[in-house]
Image (cartoon, rainbow, N blue to C red):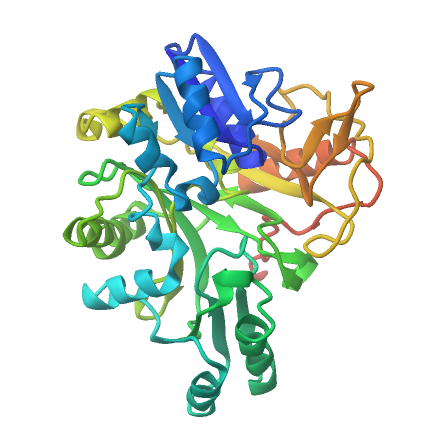
Length: 424
């Protein structure tokens, strides 16, 4: 098979890396890819959201299967366009992708079908939003309705902070059209977990879970980012919890999307919070997370290409999908200034370490004219360690990350650092 992976981030490098392990793949392409995908695939210089360019490339290179990494092309309808051409593609349609691209669509769907989630209201004007805010308790969550690269959520501890977030979206248009509508949502308390399921629109394969770190700095300080690291499986994950989430959340939302006329095919990502009343949904995403993909995909024992094919052909229920219990910890190396303004073009050293020590998935990297690998984005790379325990995996990741250097590099030091149990 000739396989194309769409995307150029660390998640997409992980997808290329996993697809390259398939015995069915004879030729692998990445569009646009990055410096890390070059050794595994042929890079096509096509932006991930250039739908027509990607469709033309799929025809030109006789692609048998396309796997979509980021949400942008899904939001723009890449799956619908490829299906029109009869090109096999793994991912949800534009209508089904609204589970991520419109938080209000997702919220209404959940409320209509009794899927546990926080109370919320949506507003497209400041005055009614502030009037509603005055009647609510604190803290409160302010969310941009559309795609905001993981940065459109404010957990406001004060009314002043909430008002600033509302005005930032609706008046200042900090997130463009993505913030033309905001949700004011009840703030839930509990442990957060990211849950992933492969689905063909009817059957859901066994779940995988990870914990993600969104804040830029140690101890969950600083602004929200796309992600600064993750680990899998969580120390609290169990068969009982997986079954409860499958029964109360993941299976019902897949059924709800069928009833809404937009069956969901692809990877469904549930951002959940484990409250005293049980698991509840914070949000859904229409793809693998970044940086969760970098710790979840290495645990997938089943051939990724076969999983994608089985989903497209409606036979996922006949495929035995297995997850490795080994612990994986991923730490993101970022550019100074991220998630705000940052500079790029700095040479990166230390990327050539042995894969037996840890995995390095490139994110914002490119090859300069002189052949050196340089930074080209905010999240530059994800370093992934593994081991029989979470602490062993953590130690492996941090041992490897010390060898990688570029100007302005920073990373969190507390990824997968769990509280010590009380003595005695």
